[in-house]
Image 1 (cartoon, rainbow, N blue to C red):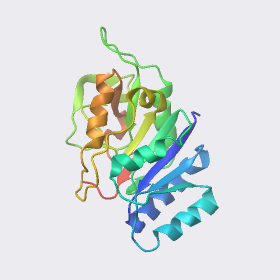
Image 2: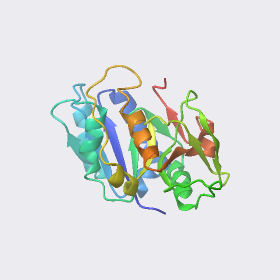
Image 3: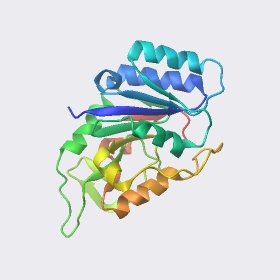
Image 4: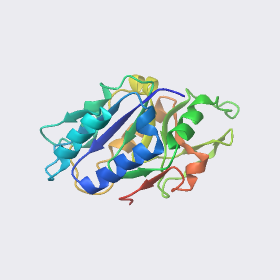
Length: 219
């Protein structure tokens, strides 16, 4: 199976964080990843630091504790440089993963895409385990009966190609945000991926939003 790292960005909501980590354990992802990286975006909630210390001891998690909250994009960028695997599972702290979801995700990267005539692509840059119903399917964008190209995929649970990220660069940093949906850093990064010729989408089975992952704090 392809090598991958987990990069989990968290801020407060210890109850959500525990559910997310439990699902990563139960799904087998933590047992098979190269590195389990957690970036804490200056959480102030009681118990977060204790739980992160526990994960460091129990699961050898690499903890990056930021002194200030500069937003989601900044937190992601703080963890990217630690990752060494060819794929990164980028997760928020409010996602519950289904069993073996990572194998389903990585198998899509392993399959050569049967692209339509005159369609050039560098391959998949972002593969989401969860989609928002408001984000439409690109016309003609179903390949090999496995991958579905989307207009956009929210960064709830992304599997990223490190090769694509090296070419595209770091994520935009738009500062902290207290509203659901964030500051649009994920959408901007999706557009940058597409502009460089990479595909963005979900496994076909993820068109049912609960198949691979459940967004606890869905919007």
